[in-house]
Length: 170
Image (cartoon, rainbow, N blue to C red):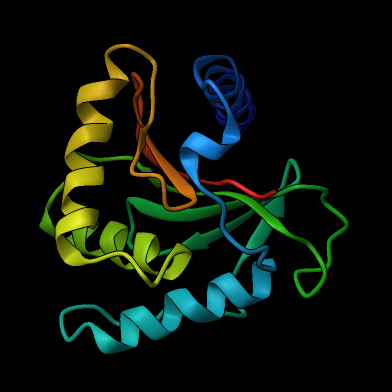
């Protein structure tokens, strides 16, 4: 199952690269380390009265990915550009919610906080639009993007769902 996740992630990156006219169309965002993204995500969770902050030290790495339990059925999974097993130095390429159940309101709250952690300049309306568009575009194997440095992809597999936040660097 984990190897399928890696394969699906690479397919998504290839589709984005082939499907865009230029990276400029997607905007750029500054580089961020895995540790900093986790910290920002936890800040968003702490600010959200409906969700508890996650335990940063409780994770495991497998197949060059970092896995954090959010619920019994949902995980935060981070793919660094180059895995060296050092979250303080690795740059985030993709962060995703890996969901083993139907997407519900709690999962959507986690997703909104993760998107906000990836780009704090996005408004609630822009985040909602990206989430909605990602599901619509998924039928064409495309991602949603509003030109502000991140793209949102949605995948529906036999055994899980994924929302992927792909960071666009210069």
